[in-house]
Length: 106
Image (cartoon, rainbow, N blue to C red; front, side, top):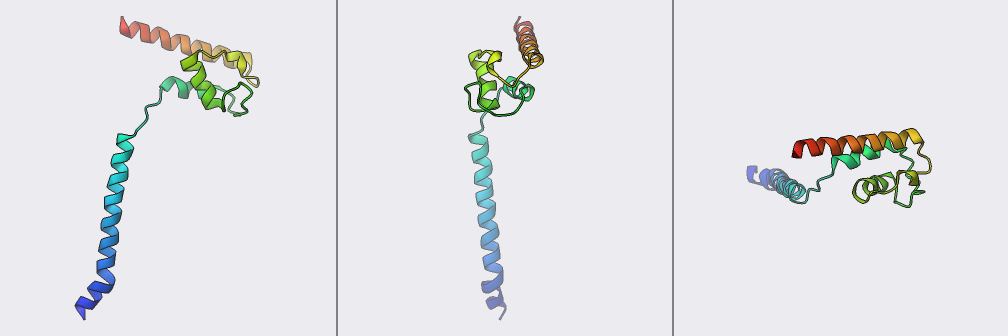
């Protein structure tokens, strides 16, 4: 009787819990192994953009345009919905970042 209860109720629960724990551990290790580092500048620039994701700049949304600004030197005037104030903020931020980077490397 007790063996029957173990076989029908407890064993499947134990196997399910163990399987979940193993796969959870594997997913955790995979997320560490395949982690992608994101440049802080891209996030900051993206937050300064209007966020319409319209693609009018020629990039696939504001995230792509932020990558273009930081890594390719894309012109800030390509963002059609963006105002001059936005362009000035981004330009000042990038200049300040470069200045701090130069000071730290000196």
